[in-house]
Length: 190
Image (tube, rainbow, N blue to C red; front, side, top):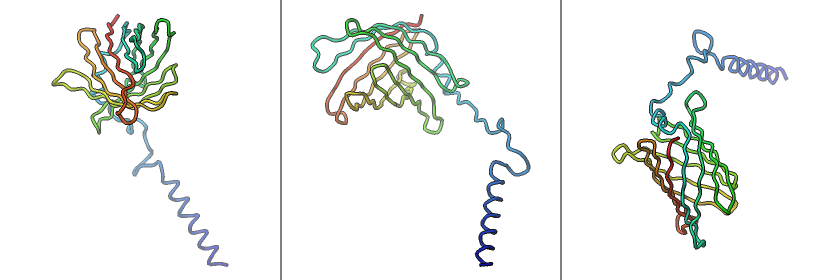
């Protein structure tokens, strides 16, 4: 019995010592300022997106005879101490109603990629990766979306020059085998 009690006391003591040592660095207390990571300069590439954008796009949906035309605005601004670019969009789809959407961009220095997230009032959500191609002066995207209609995979590209954003996006289902829709649009900074 004494051996079991001794083992318990020893384990309890080692565990307590280990837990009280957590969160401290050698030689003193942890300092949150010292733990802050320097903001990657690559995030500044997103500065050109900041502002209000008025735009229109055309969507060619599989099974629809006529393309859908949409118009609206997007407001893009920094959040989280300029680590996250946030987008709030409001668009009209003509006789098909309206929708709102929210997007986010951030950057991972280790992979040298921008990561994106999108959610909207149509029940869709998506995640993606964006990479800036300096040689072509364009953004290349790919991602995955989930909606009430199912899962799709998309890819696209975008240019941003002199306050004009031009982009295209295509989504397919069944791991890219069945095209669901294509979109192309143009927005102007207000």
